[in-house]
Image (cartoon, rainbow, N blue to C red; front, side, top):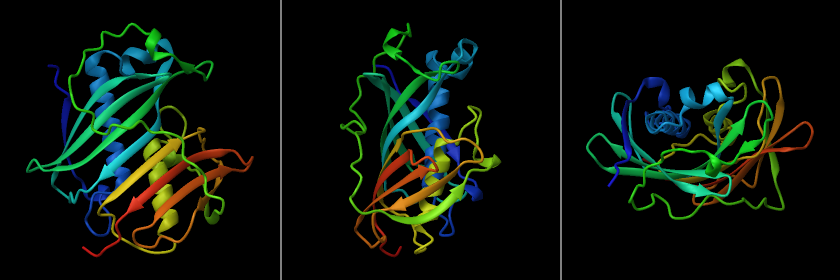
Length: 249
């Protein structure tokens, strides 16, 4: 049986929040790094695709997180490709604390993009020597569409800046999590202990654009929140659905 890629990350102070808990945006950063390392090892990473003008973008994510990882502790990330679904390449993740405890899992859908045309490339047509992984899915379901509630209220407006942009010249996927939680914390400061979050990335965001971040309702304990963003042309940039536990730690 082929084994998943396994990577250990030491948590830095800037990757935690005021409660000394690993931020959700940091978890997304670690997923991105682990996915890139594993893709390189399997022969379809940045160094293999960049000369061909092709790159990966994260399109959809479901993360279930119940970790309490702190500064100077280790986070262990396992990841493996799960297969192809239409134009999506599916990749799963499991997360472990330094003592081996299971603290989270995720499934992700990635698109392979042509840099010149800006259009998706069908990964099924690429000749990857992809090994088979006889592993139980981290999460059985695939990230689907998110239904927009009838009533959404403006949480905040935000303009993208230099530090938001990555090597693909658009806002990095983990930055959207900062946008989401920054917008929610304009109403209430809270620790993130347990959460289930889905993010669908619908349109790329470039430097200097301004977006309106909308929320479905106040972030009361136990409630589900939908947070989305639209640009000045009224185009949907991303949607997210969050269930989280606000109980004191």
